[in-house]
Image 1 (spheres, rainbow, N blue to C red):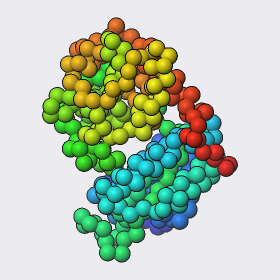
Image 2: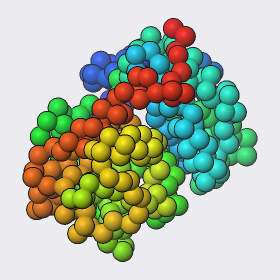
Image 3: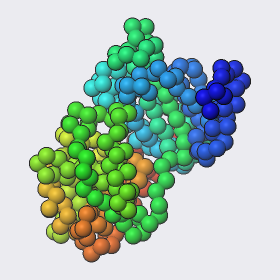
Length: 326
């Protein structure tokens, strides 16, 4: 094998990249790279230099938004969080206006009317050290793709989760949406190894944290919607929007109140309903946590109402949508 290794030409590299993408079914429609200065639509060309510090040191951040019926949903709140993550990570960004325009333009060039937008910032290329090279130029990337895919049974039957054995991230890293998702990845892999769907982080005080890439919410037997405080977990744009919208459910008598506070695990497991919320999974019911059945073991009415609230807002929410100029 080693004897067959040789120096490749540019044509060899392009052929190998094309073969790699043909061997894997991917749903990537368009990719903007500040390294390239434009957009590519061939997945074989959607590459980042190996010495970009986001690649070899994890010095990068990301965020996600959705394209629904040809409109971008809730981009401004996601950009707010992206900018906060950049400040915490000591990363330079293009102006907000430039990032917005790049996201919208890349979305338009993708031709995709339903899907996801993921965008990243890194400290740039130039060395393999810990800190960026002196002449490094910060980088910005945007990917338009089909989105993450979850089984329909999550919504029809409910998810089964476990308390992960991996420690929750310290607050600084938990609230920053960096590219270092190793704890989240290990937690998800651990759950799959146990035949379950996801894991739940628990903090040192025994309070509920968050899932692998989604927030957790609960409904008490008395009809109160509860969510953990955001100081020690990621401030999910989707769940924060839903907590605002949930006042409608209070007015309709579906729930009695909305409370954001510490939630001890024992109280959480005794809830009538549990749900996981995120920009990719939307709102999914949880019917079992460890050996504890949640409620009656079936997806509950509040979880269903919350998902309907979100889906309605994603299509007609006032001030939440940006038209993509295809």
